[in-house]
Image (cartoon, rainbow, N blue to C red; front, side, top):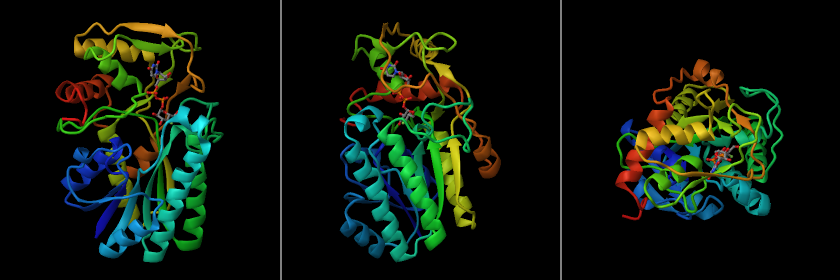
Length: 328
Ligand code: UFG
């Protein structure tokens, strides 16, 4: 019985593949390698192709005995999604519909789906709970919310059981030092800060210091990629044991401001890390912090790497040894 990981060459997907291999699972990876990296895949059988292509999906499902799917395959840049909404709807919604159609055809009943804090939009309450309003403020969040709704109907009609995982800010790198975060272009806070520490950039731009937060900069909930991936494993186990469909937030419940993240990075790296304050970035909510109590209670999810120092240290270890990311 194999687990199909769609988008398994990406940042979170590759950490998932590593975790499944460590558990002795049979792993099949599908990735179109537009953003993913071949040397990020530490094992399993790899198929190059796109979830929007039924032929490759049919080939995978006919050549292997897939019992579950974990779906990371998506475009995930909030800013880009505002300018190219159709790209996001086509890939993120269209791709998952294709996948569900093939799952239905082959009688595959379990899917763990990557969703996002962006489904909530501008939150009314902090920490954010799963039952809070979902009013996305960008097409990326809208595309993920649309799939969440599609999953609900596929459960009712076809008995496909799902676990939707709404990630907050994934960060850090594998403790084995072999895989980490390498986005092109890089837009995320911690990798950019570490590029400054490495001397690849001159400074980190702080997007706005006039938010209503403790120090005026945006507050986010940074969750270690290893903890994130562990929640997927627990969700998969629960589905395989006959668990019902569920939606869970995945964050560590602590909010850190942009300035605090930079300060911790200075401590961890021992580098100066120059910062420059600029205007706000469009569409950034002031505070996004998760309540992950539901995942902790129902999945018995325990955070292992929840200090920001550890998160940044693992990322720093990866960058120091891979200054050119996966181009080595
Ligand atoms: N930031 C800066 N300077 C930078 C980059 C980021 O100040 O150069 C700030 C942002 O304004 C934000 C915080 O750092 O306040 C974190 O920004 P990221 O770009 O690292 O992450 P986001 O919170 O924007 O995005 C994350 C995920 C998305 C998801 C989103 C949900 O990466 O996939 O949360 O809102 F959609």
